[in-house]
Length: 109
Ligand SMILES: Cc1ccc(Nc2c(-c3ccc(O)cc3)nc3c(C)cccn23)cc1
Image (cartoon, rainbow, N blue to C red):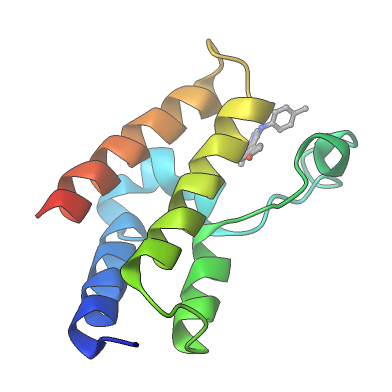
C-alpha cells in the first residue's frame, strides 16, 4: 500500500540530497548522465539502468514508488552505477561515496 508518511519522508530525504550545501559533490547526480556532453560513449554499454536524482524526483511526483524500499532501490542503483563506471580512485567515485554517506545518515533517521 502507498503510505503517505513513508513517501513524504522519501521526498524530504531527496530534497536534502539535492540541496545547494552539497553541490560540490552532488552535481554528477542531479541530472541524467549525458554521455555526449561528458564524452563517455561507453556509458550506455556499461550502465544498463541509468538513474539520477531528477529521475527519482519525477518518479516520486508521478507516484511511481509504492514503498520507501522502491525509492531506496533507485537511490542505491544510482550510486552503484557511479561506482561501476567511475574507477575507485576517481573524483566522481569519491563524490558518490560522500553523497551516499549523507543518504545513509538521513535514511536511517
Ligand atoms: C570519460 C568520462 C569518465 C567518467 C565520467 N564520470 C562522470 C560522471 C558520472 C556520474 C555518474 C555515473 O554513473 C557515471 C558518470 N559525471 C561526471 C561529471 C558531472 C563531470 C565529469 C565526469 N563525470 C565522465 C566521463
